[in-house]
Image (cartoon, rainbow, N blue to C red; front, side, top):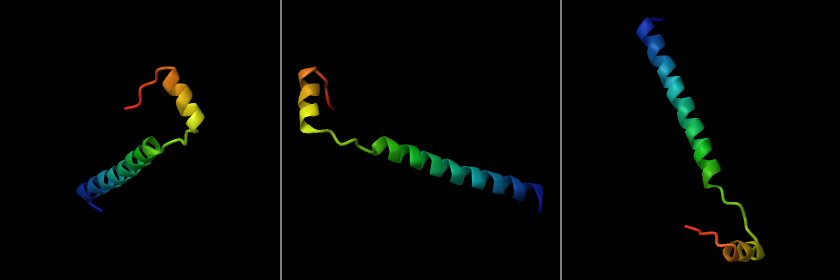
Length: 51
């Protein structure tokens, strides 16, 4: 295998792993924790701002 082929293969694998890691991080960020209505009311009374 030539050096350029090895070089390109390394970056291709690194890019795929990077995409997978970013996807997993994004999905973790997007997950929403269920919140009971009573907890929501308490947070509103405490002055939390949801936007």
